[in-house]
Picture 1 (cartoon, rainbow, N blue to C red):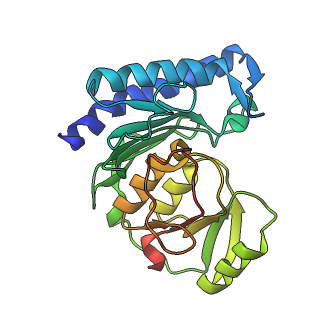
Picture 2: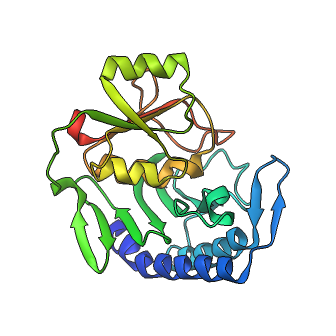
Picture 3: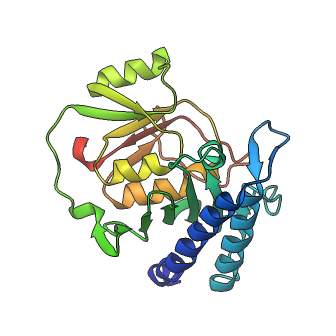
Length: 253
């Protein structure tokens, strides 16, 4: 399997999916609340249809698990599969904010092997396909994230909420975090991989499709992704739910 070619073949479809997401938003989104009490829009569903079709054309033999469809979610035997979140950060998307992202992570032997994340409103495209091969495409220029110079400054982390729980505060103290900024979407993985921030900590929450692409991009940039015990995170768990998370950029390892 030529993972590099698969990912490079998906870059243009991701950019087009981003254009689609923006044009649908400009036309006015139709919104509803799902059974899990989270919002979804016709934009989520249309982008999902577009992205999963392209992925299926390029890798017809690899199953897809997407947030917005039920297919393959009950198959606990899968070892090689895609995890797709067509719009991560739906709240930002439907409220004309900029942090929402389009995501696909390729899982091989239950580990993240490659990832693509596009933030259309920011025009930042991130992708990776193996150790030392993590990139950002922005304004027509490709930057290798592994080769970005480290910046010496106080340690800055991203948090999901402005209310920091005591167990997370303890981890912050152990690492020496002096500042944290709120960010909800998977863009957090990308800006940590790019060295703009140094990490992120979260208690168990969300699902595998929320983190798979970002996990690949961050570890391929030289960073780490573990649970609170320092254990490796694997994919294809029965309920597809995430454990606790600690992300670290290469700058603080």
